[in-house]
Image 1 (cartoon, rainbow, N blue to C red):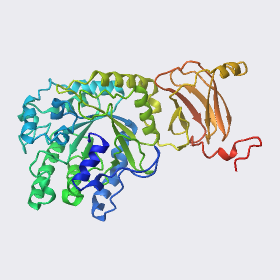
Image 2 (cartoon, rainbow, N blue to C red):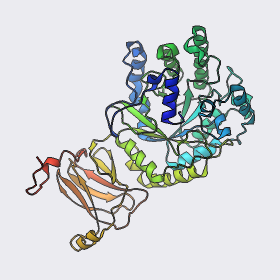
Image 3 (cartoon, rainbow, N blue to C red):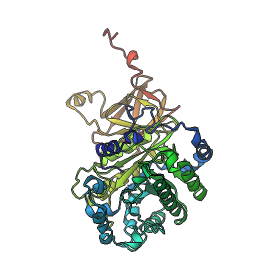
Image 4 (cartoon, rainbow, N blue to C red):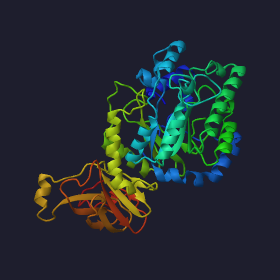
Length: 474
């Protein structure tokens, strides 16, 4: 993953491949533009057809899960300066390699991650098996630059796999195609012999990952610089992966469409019918960065999770463990708070489907499951002085939703189970009344609304229908 969006784009532009990883320019959380557009190359149709035939079955668990843990851990963790330090700071390879001898994680550190993920309500994990620095966190016969043959003295990927399975979590592998350490990692762009060697090396490492650890649920490629999909032999790469792991799902970062798109550090829904997953950091760094104190709040995480679920996507949230494998206390505190909220409100996230929610208010997010609408009130309205005066006529707090195109049957607070009184002027607005003055839940209160049909919201569509009482808006 990149140090930040600017540095990554600058790096790729400098290397002459700025267009290779273009970001989406669509607007709005639920824009229709896919984050990375389909290749449209008929050469890849055989792989696409193979994946499409089994996609619904393979991805059913993933669509239901919604929330996963990303783990960026490697030699850069020893330095504690973020995961792009080697490239961004121009550290020579022989100097950087010395950190491999000083990388000494505590035994089974991954158990802490898996237990945290379970408490946080995350359903799957994705760990960096090899990042851009080229260091393999697993046992391999193809290089000595790997955890068992360096400071750790053991297979860190195996420990991670066993820890995730022990907590009942799905297992994902991140793998960076770009490699700053391998002598052919950049040379392969202009030297055909180097390309063949490096592609063979890359395919060989992926084969080991797909062979040596039992069933793997997700393969998360990253950064296909400096080669094209044809040069990577990406179709053959994916064919090998599916032959070894028929139930796996793969992303779109080896140059092929894959099973899902991967917006990074922003939320952008793919086009209808296309699976997508936003990956995001808890602070501003992927790898451990001892000076980065820009932590997201539990409220921000819960809101992002709801926004992803509303657009039919998943949320892959990253931790950057310390060199010994321990998780920064701030990450633990944030994820524990999110997990407590999901313990109560999980039905408003898990197994939800993409909704049609246009022009919704800044105070709320919406998710849906079938004909059930979940209103996520981020900023509880409380009681203003004017509302206190009006409470003589209508006591309690009021939440109003404009443009709901479905008849409401019932409403209740998820936190307490309390039934909520409502009135509806379809399709203008739904009014939920008599709510508690203090927010019933934190960091967001969810109101479950049962409807007679799919709860479509079009707040902009009702503008011409407002009774404006002699005010001309033409």
